[in-house]
Amino acid sequence: MKSLKNKISESIASYTARTGTAPQRPGAVLFDMDGVLYNSMPFHARSWNLLFSEIGIDMPEQEVYLHEGRTGASTVTAIFERELHRQPTEDEIRRLYRRKTELFAGMGAVKVMTGARETVNICRRAGATTVIVTGSGQGTLLDRLDSDFDCAFPAPSQRITAYDVTHGKPDPEPYLKGIAKAGTSPWQSVGIDNAPLGVESSSRAGLFTIGVNTGPLPSGTLKAAGADLELDSMEECAEALGILLL
Ligand code: MG
Image 1 (cartoon, rainbow, N blue to C red):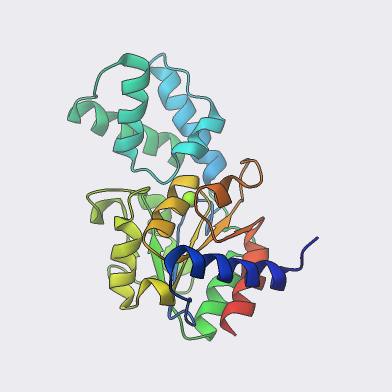
Image 2: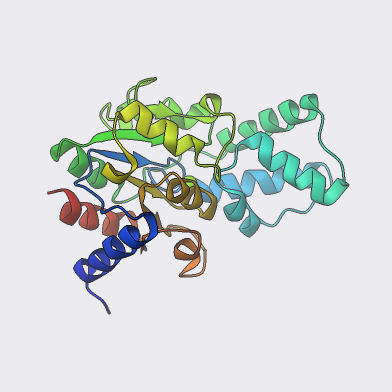
């Protein structure tokens, strides 16, 4: 087993080779929300699966992890094109996403991901700006951020959500808008995401990208999507940021 310090040194070398710029001491850390700060992905997977089964479409729960990071509208469109060979109407998108949100809210309270608070606290202790970059528009979680993370992500100055972007992940726009809010450059910023599309977005935006595999994806999936460093848990991420920032 490689030590975490070795993995970090290798990832810095690969970032420098990939971007032609050595990463500087991070001034901002950008966090995805679902599957990074909250252990919400099992509920999202179940609610998407139930939603589509209500209209006779089978969307396996595992597949939800591959769409993760897209906006709700984009997920509905992708499934409609594949299963029904047509685009959904705007009304269908609105109706289905509202129903999905209802199913999700009915599943009970989502827990903060183990290790997430420690990770955020390390960033704050190091004086790095913390920003949320999520494709979600789910009020049930966005409304809890201030109390769960001690106002580390004040709205709207330190948040990019589904409502702020034209092109969602895997487009680089969400992470680029995130660093614009933080007032840093890509090489002074770290992106943390658990989904292949989110990792791709952060990596294409030029950030030093940590992929944290908190779900059922095979090991190496996030590296293949562009992560400079792939980790297995937010506890390990806290340890890595301690090395990178403190
Ligand atoms: Mg996520």
